[in-house]
Length: 127
Length: 119
Length: 358
Image 1 (cartoon, rainbow over the protein chains, first blue to last red):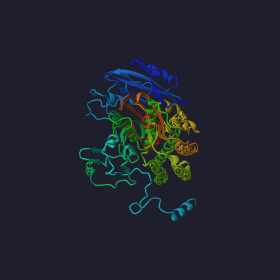
Image 2: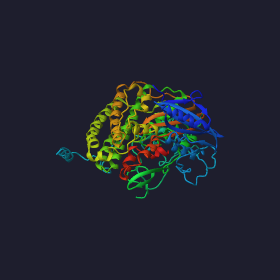
Image 3: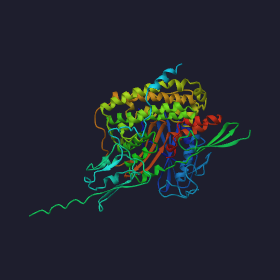
Image 4: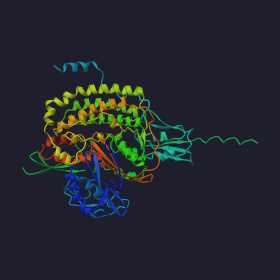
């Protein structure tokens, strides 16, 4: 029986550097992992982006921490379906993704007149 | 030819739908319908106001009032479960539609002063 | 012919909810599709910061009306994992009953809407008439027709008594008979087949790579279903996922159609094994830590990411709904299809836009 809930601890989830995320996800993809989604939380000074991947219902998470407003490389070149969720995180948290194939310019959900990122505790200006 | 059976069956059976305003469905026994209160039993503790997820109940201890906004109520029944004196209940029927918004306000009658203890 | 750009939606007769697609067409053949969301974005995830973690159950139920109880189930299982709550066995079996009733009503709704999408209106009404029986079951057992609000952190709110159980099983027998009567119409009809067979083919490799979920994935021949993990009481029931191998619109229809019978079977199994006992345990403490919780909805797998910091309010609630995962496969299916097939293709992923945008 596999786990349907996975409590994230330091043992099962490692924090990796933003520039290593593409090589990490590529090696996981070669092992047969499927892209599920990405989540993000506000840690105050920085944003934590969590990548959820699964294989045979077994979930693997990768954490990336980036200071607010800093760029993270996009994994759309590895998993093409990631562009939608990356656009969402860009819009809600102001994390800029480098190399998005389809960039909604922060207008996937929100309008132009929204000035600050709504999901951060202290919003930063939207680009 | 294979439709003949269906055609004949449809001729003799009743409508699949209900002729609504004239014929209404009996509500099931435990349906969460309109929120009601027995004001005499209420102790104005405000637990319902605290628990309500849609924040549609306002209880005032000073003015002895209990107010609900029926248009904000989501019929979840949390307040009914949370009430310590079980003075809230839900009727089996939903509210009829209205043309204008309105609030339901209940005021508790002042209880007659307890007779001073005689010495 | 030169490339023409056509807007599709947000208001379109086949779309129950607003969604926009910009289609680039050449001679009525779609070459490119770009989605635009945001017509029903409500920012429900942000509400977790001002409503406490028990009130959030009522809010996540309203993310989507069609899979309300499964949203609440996924959320409750996440909180239970954070607070180390052991759910009583009777509550776990009752959760399966309500979840599977929800699956039947959602699939019947979808089959009706799908029939409507290719212009078969009487079939739409036939399916929705059957669905009304399930809605009655939900209203009688939980109190509400659509928002089946029965899940609590630590168990369920309501019980199903033996005579209600008998009534449910009798009604399911009628539902099974009536759905079977429509089987030849949806599966063997010439017109229906012309509109669905071979349209919008999603190969096994592409479906897996694009992260498709639910029947969209299983119709491409991948037996992946979150119920295999055995959440609630699924681990004690006999369950194998329904799969189809063609990956076209017809396969997705057949897959959902067969899942109705599987759901009826699961409810029967759950009632046969229903243990006696209490319905809920009182959870102690406050959620602290991070958890990822997953559940299989009628449309596919839903993922909740919850982060608590030992306070009454959650720090972060993130919901990834199945339709969100199924949009990239849809964009893969659309290029190369006829413009007239676009509504049918969109409907086969069972789009729930208010889920997607939250």
